[in-house]
Structures are given as C-alpha cells and as structure tokens.
Amino acid sequence: MTEWFVAEQAWLGRELFQRGLAVIYLVAFVVAARQYAGLLGERGLTPVGRYLEHTTFREAPSLFHLHHSDRFFTGVAWAGAALSLATAAGLTDAVPWPLAMLVWVVLWLLYLSIVNVGQVWYGFGWESLLLEAGFLAVFLGNDDVGPPLLVLVLLRWLLFRLEFGAGLIKMRGDRVWRDLTALDYHHETQPMPGPLSWWFHRLPRPVHRVEVVGNHVTQLAVPFLLFLPQPVAGVAAAIMIVTQLWLVLSGNFAWLNWLTIVIALSALPLGDAQPGDAPAAYVAVVVAATVVVLVLSWWPAANLLSRQQRMNASFNRWHLVNAYGAFGSITRIRYEVVVEGTRAERPDDDAAWEEYEFRGKPGDVRRRPPQVAPYHLRLDWLMWFAALNPGYARSWFPTLAQRLLEGEPAVTGLLRRDPFAGDPPRWVRARLYRYRFTTRQERRESGAWWVRTLAGGFLDPVQRRVSR
Image (cartoon, rainbow, N blue to C red; front, top):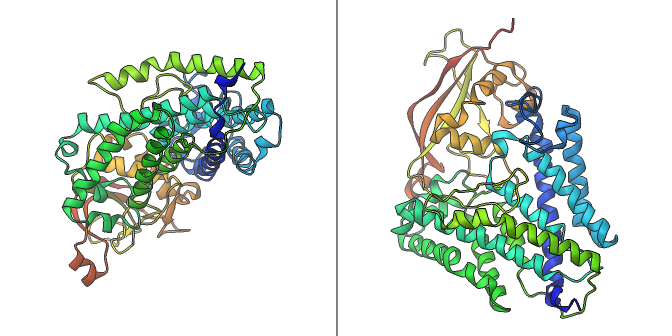
C-alpha cells in the first residue's frame, strides 16, 4: 500500500546526500568552534553574551538562551563536529530509523542555535541553506526504510529555488548579466578569489560570454527539468553539479557550491530498483513534514515572482524554506581595507606602519590567492563587505582596532600574520586600496598577482582606549 511512498532508484542518491551533508555540517561546526572566541566570545568583536541581553528566545531560538559561556559555546560546536563526523562515517545507518532521525534533529538544533546568535558573522545565505537541507535530512530515514519520494521532491524544490532564485536576481539586478559582461569583472572582484581566479579572469572575453550564457541556462531553464521523470531530472542535476564544480575552481564561496552539489546528488537516479519498508509511523511523520514545508513555501514562491525579489532571506526564525540568490549586482572595481599598526609616537606618514595580513582576503600583492573553501573565513568575508560600504562594519570594526591595540589573542588568532605579536602597536589605522589583477606581462616581470593603488582612508589612526 505504500509503493507510492518509496523512490526505489534513490537509495545511493540518499546515501550520498546524507554523508555529504554530514561532512558539510562537520566543516560548519569546526568553523564555529575555531572562530568563536575572536568573533563572538567574551573578548570577541560582537560578544554573544551582550547580544543575548537584549534578544529573546522568540526572536532568535537558541539553546544559548538557557545557558551561555565561552566554554559552553565551544563545547556545543565541538560536540556538533563530533556528531557530524560519526554521521559521515555511517552512524545513522547503524541505528533504528527513529534514532537516525533524532541524530539529524540534534545536528539541526545545534547549528540553528549557533546561527541565531551569530549576528552579522552568520548572515550568509549558505547558513540558511544548510539548515533547510539539514531539516529535510531528518525525514529521509536510513537503510531501515525506503527513500521517501516526498522528501526527495522537496529537496528538488529546494534546489530549484536555489538555482532559479539566483538566476532571477541576476537578470533583475544588474545589466552586466543581461549584456553578458558580468564575468569581465567577477573573477577579479568576487569576495575571495582562489588560486585559479587570476587565470579565469584572463580568459578571452568571448569565453566570459559563454560562461554567462551557461550560467543563465543552468539557473533559468534547467531547474524546471528537475520535476520531470528520470532520467531527465538526473540530467538536470548533473548539469548543475558540473556548473558548481566550475565555480569551485574559480573562487572561494565557503560551502555554498559543495552543499549545492550534495543536494543535487539526491536527484540522481542512483541505486538499483529495490523494495523498501515504509512503516506507518514513518509515513505519517514524512507526510506531516511535507505539509509544513508546502505551507511555508508560499513566501519564497511569492518572492520568486516579486519584482522586489529578496536575496538570501529567511521568512521564519527556524530558517525553513528560504529565499536564495547570489550576486544580484556585480562589483566593477575591487577595493580592499588594509589594516596597519605602528609603535611610533606620532601616527603620521613618517611612522613605520606595518600591515596585518588576513588569512584569505587579498593583502600582500605577491601572495597568490589561497584555496580556503569549503572552510569559511568569516572575518575576511566581512572585510570585503566593509570595503564596499563602511556601514557594513560599523558594529565591529572599531572593536577590531581596539582588540589589535590590546594584542587580544582571540582576535589576532583570526589573522594570518600579526606583525606585533607579543608587543601591540601604539596606533592602528586602516586605509582603502584599489586592487586589480596584474596583466600577463606584469605577472611575468614582477611575480605579483595584484597591483594596488591607494584610494583613501578608512579609519583614522586610533589609540587604545583606557578603561575607567
């Protein structure tokens, strides 16, 4: 009686999705554990404790409303990482299906708790994407039960919104996507270029046009094929996977591309046709979850049709059934905030200013852009936004300067190099530079990846504040 419920050729697709999702959870929890102290800890840039003082559970559901300390937060993050690792290794297939569901619920709740107190550092679309995919994973079951067709369709609906929403926001948002010139700029001005970004930028312009056309086809046409019978749906998912791998090669977008690939794996017709059990209790739970997702889908569906389409928006505090999109506008010129310090008495241009080097973002023009994704360097990403508009940094940049003047280890630990390790500077300032990739000739002659020119000030020299 439950033949309709089981997607018989999705056994391996489900397995790949769940194992891949567990790996991404692992990365996310490790990022949270390693960067918490500098970003959100008591001596961090925007402490969680201070945030919780004026935020209610209803506004931001999180277990940290029940208890919070630096040690407890870090323990939660490492516990999530350990559970993710066990899940990636097969924990959920070694226990009965109700316990497997419980494991996925715990992972989702732990990461939701972190995101909802993460403030500006957790305002990225891939946080909500991970939570929505993680919620759907709860209802996929394990080897005890057949792959539920309803949940697999909901994953395709998620993939559709992710790709189609990104395609629409581009066409609505910036003419360079419509005249096919977007990638004349994007590889150079994207938030965090990777090791191959210089070569991608230097591809002939006709190739850039082909890249843009390929993007439009993948995001605006292919997503509709996801709802057709196999193997058409699987072909659509495969096209998306190939496109995402191209993006993996061309830049660093945390786990966005890898998570998209993992979701697409669930749409591939993988695994032999084999019967699967579907206990009545399991069917009831899956049907109930499907109804909830369908009801919540009204808001993101309406958003897709709206001329005022919102990008990367959550319509509820649980980050379920969200709106997605990326690069609705393309930056034409790259600016970087360069932070410097000096021990000189007077903070003038005659002082010996030394630069702080960040882990991922451009700084030293001779340093090749590193590969960091799927790891997420949250401070580096916010520095890119700060260069676009100082308003993005108003809540945390002054504190960053003060923590550098104090030599705070939790904050300097977020950096690649602190030139004043053990002996903080007397003054800190920040200046804005225009960066561009070197030409082929400049690259041969200088060995540099970037050329930079001073564009102006960002933060006037400041001294350490004296507490009273």
